[in-house]
Image (tube, rainbow, N blue to C red; front, side):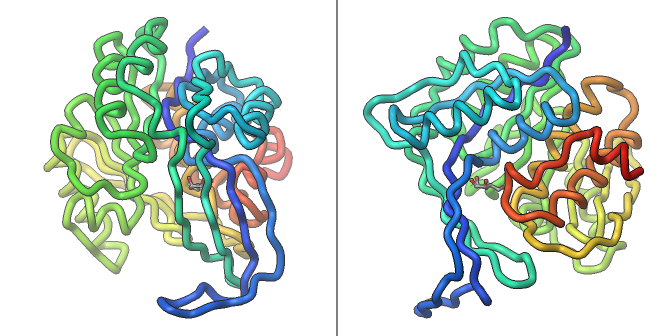
Length: 303
Ligand code: RIB
């Protein structure tokens, strides 16, 4: 059966509800603290699984309670996690996420065991990749690991999606084996040194980045929807209007649903964008990252 492989980060999210995000030097009092499994890699894998795909995860956790909580969450999502390393020498990754009353967040990631994910381990773990499989990558694990994973999977005929999040400090050789690059507006500005405010500007900048990288590019713009550039043209997919509670993990939901849709129908980018946009819009109506990811059956039930 064709598979979505996700090689990437696993964190325990410490989500703190605040009235407003602290500015530099400011102390604010939070209303509540919730611990939950997350990490961009973990969230994207769960999103792909909840949309109905078979998913295999390659990553690393520490030999601790947080690592076990994450492995349990992957198991509950029926994700194959046999290739998740348990590193006894390093704590599981952690993310501290204050969320304000408008649903906006700021994220600090302390990578911990995510740094233990080596290029050699991903290469070995991707040994069973077949033509038609999809590999999803992000940038919360070492960049050398990301590059090796892309090269390994591409050589085996897989379709490689890189979500360039968080924005990288260097893009050297990062896109060599990537078929589809997914960025948000901030990452577009860093990765491509291309910024835009209006929809028209974002569309143009997305097309420019596709030309510069030689990959298809999708730029997600939150309530502004998404812009997708491929084969010299760009299309805009509007986002449904929703009341946002927490935007954390919406981008991951988008990427996971997109990957699953492209696994099922590789040439239907428009259909994949529609599914990803609808799922991400639903995710922002609920608190948390991994907890907020909808199941395909929920989306289908409400149209
Ligand atoms: O994209 C949201 C995710 O970013 C959180 O789950 C957090 O762990 C960080 O990786």
